[in-house]
Length: 272
Ligand SMILES: [Zn+2]
Image 1 (cartoon, rainbow, N blue to C red):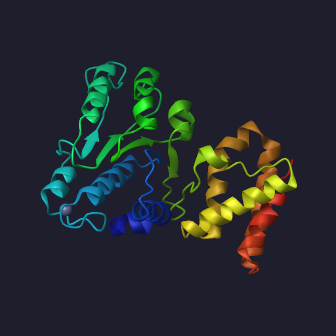
Image 2 (cartoon, rainbow, N blue to C red):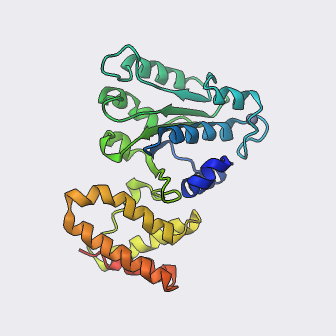
C-alpha cells in the first residue's frame, strides 16, 4: 500500500496503518510525532491516496488517476485538506474562522474518504480555541473522515486532542517506531499496582503485538524511545527502573526466551 520509501524507513508505522486499513479499523484521529515534517506529510497524502485511488482503492495507489494526481498536488477539493496557519497572522496561528469553515465543509457529504491534515499542530500554531471547536468532530467524526495532526513532540499537544487520538511515532533512526496501543486504553503505562493487573497488561500487549504482527524487539525499543522524554526528567526512579527491566527483557529475547514469558516478566518486574 504505502510507498517503498515509507516502508523502508518506517516499517512498523506502515505495517500498523496497513493492518488498520485492511481490517477497516482506522482511527478517527492520528497524531504523527516526527521531527521530519515532510515525512509526516507524506504519510498523510499517501493515506489519502490509498483510500481514494480510483484504480486500486485500498491497495497500492496508481498515482495516475485524477484523485491520486490531485492529492499529490494538494489540489483535491475533498479527499485531502491541509490546514495551515494564516500567513497574515503575526502569531502564525490557524484562524478560528478557518476551522469553523472546515467543520462546516466536513458536515457535507461526499463520496471521498477525507483526510484532514494539520502540518504543525502544537498549541502555538493550533490554539485551544481551534482545537475545542474540532473536538466533537474529532470524537464523533462522520464516516470516512480522518484527522491527522503532525507534531514534533508529544508534549505540546492539547490534552483533549491527545486523548482522542492514536499516537504514532515516526522515528527514522530506529527503523520505525510506534505506539501500537491506543493511549486511552492502556496508557502504555507498564507499571502496575498488583500481580493481576500486570498480567492483564502482559496479555493485552501480547494480543496487540500478535494482531498487528509487531515484533517484540521493536516494541521494547519503542517503549524505550517514548518513555525517555516523559520519565527522564519527571520521574527518575521510574525511569531507571523501566530501563533496567527493558534491558533485561532485551537480554532474555536474545537468549531465545519465549516472547510471552519476556512480556510477563517485564510487566511483573514493574509492579510498584
Ligand atoms: Zn489512483
